[in-house]
Length: 310
Image 1 (cartoon, rainbow, N blue to C red):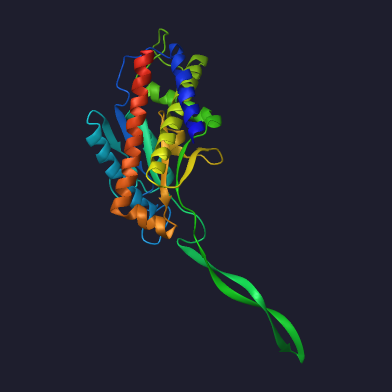
Image 2 (image 1 turned 90 degrees about the vertical axis):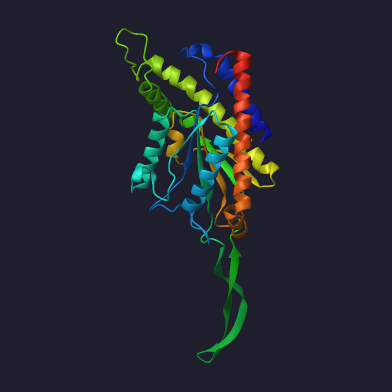
């Protein structure tokens, strides 16, 4: 974990030093707008626990997190992707809803995207029964004594637990670069040519997007590491920071800003589900993420102070 944190700091510093290649921008606060995303919703319940669903659980945590961020950082605008038990935008298709989340974040020109989710593992929340051979017995069949296996139902407890935070994989950055370019185009940024139109396919645009992407990757890694560190400080088991390589997460891939997806725990684990659905558990989860964001903002402000740029 410490190694990942150092790498994040190093990459962020290197990219900051190369900021002369990025377009000139007016100084702005390290964080102006944070997008808080509660995963799933409506017809998409997400992971199913014994006493809750992922969609219901993460909405409660996301709303509490947004309130805590607003109270701790009154100068920062907090935008929620959803505030009810429905999918964002009143949609009914979860894939369309995920695209809507990313589009909402990009149109708002967010400085940070935090998606809240919960995990599940195994065949059934809590545990399940399996048939196991426990021995043999002798029976008489067709006048002969034969040995037959004896089976017994045994309960297998669902043991997976802990937190983990995902970021978009660096080796799949072309998708993130496209979203970054699109976000800057929609924000009104233009090229230096006489037409005033930014050619998203030009080498200049791609180089700029790649530089931004490295910067965003470093920032995402930095915040994700801080989030997991704060969970550990609070006594939680951390499964670490992970890059999503094998399967794309649209809200990480298509958001043109630093973005993380926090798995707050396993609803399939009996004890952990009780904890993350409890008032105390949710308060501690929110406190950990909030402290990480505060540390993250402080790190960005320190970079800005030393380098004179954002």
